[in-house]
Image (cartoon, rainbow over the protein chains, first blue to last red):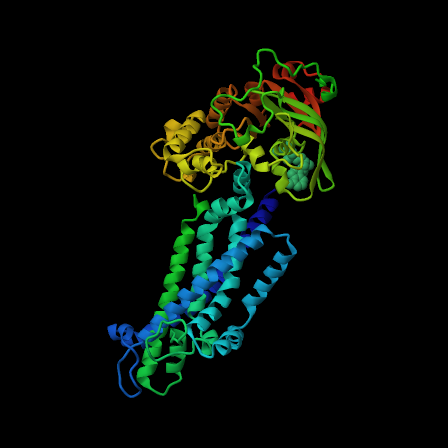
Amino acid sequence: MSDGAGSVERVHRTRRVVNRLMLTLTGVAAFVVVVPLLLIFYHLVSAGAGALNLDFFIRLPVPVGDTGGGMLNAFVGTLSLVAYATLLGVPIAVGAGIFLAEGRRAPLATVVRFVADVMNGIPSIVIGIFVWAWVVVAMGRFSLLAGSIALAVMLIPMVTRTTEEMIRLVPRELREGARALGFTRWRTTLGIILPAARSGILTGVLVALARIAGETAPLLFTAFGNPFLEWRLNEPVASLPLLIYQYAISPYDDWHRQAWAASLVLIGFVLMVSLAARFVIRNPYRGS
Amino acid sequence: MMEESLLPMETKWNPGVPGIPAPTVGASHALPEGGKQVAAGAPFAVEARSFSFWYGANQALADISLTITTRQVTALIGPSGCGKSTFLRSINRMNDLIPNTRHEGELLLEGGSVYRPDQDVVLLRRRVGMVFQKSNPFPKSIFENVAYGPRVNRLVQGRRQLEGLVERSLRQAALWDEVKDRLEKSALGLSGGQQQRLCIARALAVSPHILLMDEPASALDPIATQKIEELIYELKDQYTIVIVTHNMQQAARVSDVTAFFYLGKLVEVGRTEEIFTNPKNDQTEAYITGRFG
Ligand SMILES: Nc1ncnc2c1ncn2[C@@H]1O[C@H](COP(=O)(O)OP(=O)(O)O)[C@@H](O)[C@H]1O
Ligand SMILES: [Mg+2]
């Protein structure tokens, strides 16, 4: 009897030790995930914060040799690129996502889903080259439009798949409730299902935005870069990631500082968008 | 008509119950345009003639012959998986949403074949309201939940008429007093029982003749359940109600007629008090006395 109780006690102790060990290991893993972000932030702030001033945001770059100047062209460029990519990509992606979720058994849906997954894995430089060949060469010039198309091509498969997943998460009962009221299939999808999935889809869009805002490779031969302020669709534009790259490989200390500062701003932007996405997640339809 | 052949079981119940007025459409009902249904002449709200149903190779209903009388509450009882929901969902063709299904035999709604090729499913479903086991309000305001159906189906003109209809439907569902000050608030903030009554109001707002309820109270607490039962009692003056329930007491309390399904077959159907006090069939008796199920 006492022997039995002792062995039970031993099993308990072993279990506790194993439990604690596993918890510690996963805790370490979690810490390792957080460390790079903290280090990046620390480094960016210490190296770039000095160059962050009002001029940095509202002035254009100055010629090599002069100090000062800013990156207004890159801010406007990146914002325009992201805005046009969203405008171009999101309607297509949401439409495709609805198609995948609704016609899930259609052979075409299987093909589209597979293509979207492949597209998600294509290196972004390849997308840049592809858009160069089809848009830049055809237009005969680098342009904001070409850059936006390249970013939209990156965004579409991401948002397509999240839209599909979010629509599928909507409870089946909701669809049946609408159909039982005599709603047609498309009315049910557009009037009931899509609004119910809205916050999830919006989150997916924000995550995709955060991704494409920092992309450099697809813009190399499309948006190209521009030392002047530009927002017309058929002109080349600057962008933050491109300018960071150019400044970072230059031999000038002042440019290095500005590159750090621009990185800080870019990370800040991504962080803000991610926070916004989190905020949207917190008030989803199913949250109640 | 052909009652003998309609009721293959040894039921003596006569579906033409005395005291029930001829099934005409109540004055409070807006007729769907065209007034296509044969309501005025049909003796039964729903009539199944040797109706069978398959999910792929799996037969869920076998040779069901059953008549459901207008303005009565008919309870479908039986153990899980016996086909109650399948039968209910055939009446408004919700099973169409499930691929690889097929049926045989006839299913008539107010005298017209539910499955006839030229049946307009939208018009059919407007005549048949449905309330589900899990309350499923739309993620919209309380007002919108009720107003959406009539608006989509163009049953009202103008805001005033719509507001009147919403109020009337909410009153019918015994929910008006609880929500009249928060119509613009999200329906998802309501309690489970309120949500279920909102779903009933939503169904009533498109002026159905028949209300199908698939275990409408099985997820609710006793008080909310009681409210739903009282509501069913109120509504049966105007609507034909078919309710699936696992709760024997509930079936006994709310229904006029009870149909016992077992393994996809209709075993027995009759006046509820008959079924519960003097069942003809041994399986029925075993089920209602709790010996299986
Ligand atoms: N969507 C479906 N696909 C395949 N089989 C189904 C589906 N729904 C129900 N069935 C089957 O049909 C039979 C009857 O189910 P159902 O009508 O839901 O029974 P009940 O409502 O009486 O519990 C069961 O055997 C069930 O497994
Ligand atoms: Mg069921």
